[in-house]
Length: 132
Image 1: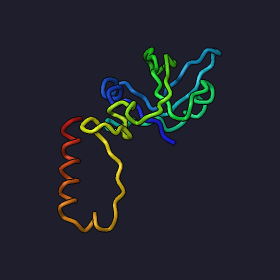
Image 2: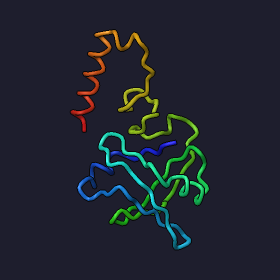
Image 3: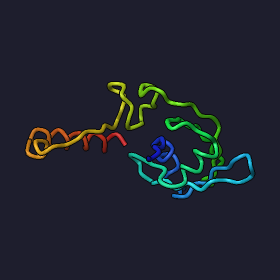
């Protein structure tokens, strides 16, 4: 399991963002999360399971964190996601045509041997790089 973070947060706070995040909770304790500092696909990589269990989140959930500065957060609200159409457009599993930036695909041997597909993939990568 991996947890995606809105790339606009990383873009906005890139120069001050650290890999460790601290999520406060109502028991005057908190949880330490680790986040990648990727501009394209930032992910929470460690600590999410503890936050999920403490807050009793469902498996598919969108969480809004309040940010207090110095990489300190609290859970402001959350909602269970029951349909891919409810995912934000930056999420890699968003299925709304012409909105999602990322996509998943399975490559086979034909993909590696087809010059046209390689060209398309390279153009897609350049497109993503220009829109960062």
